[in-house]
Image (cartoon, rainbow, N blue to C red; front, side):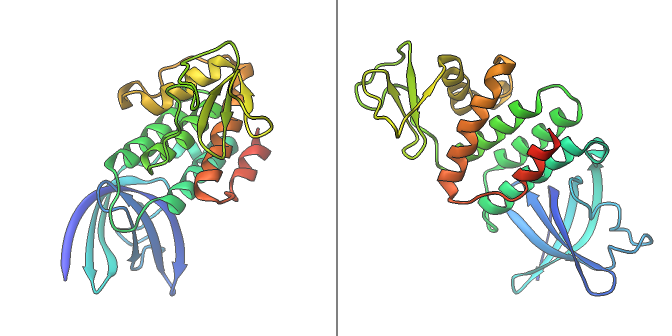
Length: 246
């Protein structure tokens, strides 16, 4: 039997037994832990407040034969504002669905937890447009999962930038106006290419610090969304709820 503590955030909960919950917790270094929270559905339980989606805190676990149990949860942030706005809630749930699909249940990059928490903070504080946060999360998740697109220069001739640039979602490759292979490659405004390069290559502290015209945010989103789905060969169900909330 192993006992350990780690910080993490609850991505999802499920009902089991009469008063128990199953919680899926994104932890800093041990990936996503699926654990039983005994009695957590009862308001009298010490686990009740922490065993809820989007709660970030300090978790104490016990593991035996591959089965995890939650011993204690000390909530540090509950992101209450997400529950007051349908658009924010649906986007946060979409983020959780992506993480549940892409993150290992044994180990993960600590930057995944940092990316998720920062995205939730910015979403709750209305500090960045929802479409911008969505695009950043999608593309950076792909990078952290080992699917960084080749955006340094044209994939064929090495040209850094021409007046017209094209992105091939299936290859994750960039092409200049002279090398693009239609219809596989889609014409992308240079400003969107610059935003994608920033998301892929910037230091985390600067990740959300870029400007893009509101009119171009849908273009950026189309590219990052299609690329994420191409990488993981999966259509994320909760994405539909987000678009319905716009």
